[in-house]
Image (cartoon, rainbow, N blue to C red):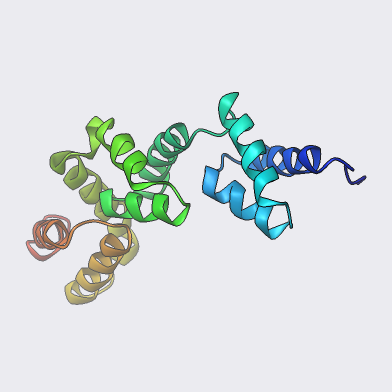
Length: 164
């Protein structure tokens, strides 16, 4: 690959290549440019231009990540916040993106946790209830569900035997 002589063109090319692979947050692109040795002023100018034309939009990125992670990975609200923070999205943007979602209220989060437990239960059919309880509680905790919800769902779905 031929390196662009113009630092702005080089930085833009790096960002566009990154965005071809998957959507990225402003912070992720800034970190990539810094790792690649791009001057901070050049990086900021390129990122500002990409934001201006709509290629870098942390709000849209957060909304898309919430939808994807919720549907594909079964993440709870805390798990979503953690994932967005890890990717460098500002707290204000995270709060706004979460506020836009109707399916992140307590009732829907509980339904998602129950669905995740139900999907995992067949694989644990031969295990004692105590082992299933421990494993499912750990799974829900890793996915970012609040501990009170984890206890309630596990108690109702496993311990009370509704899925035994």
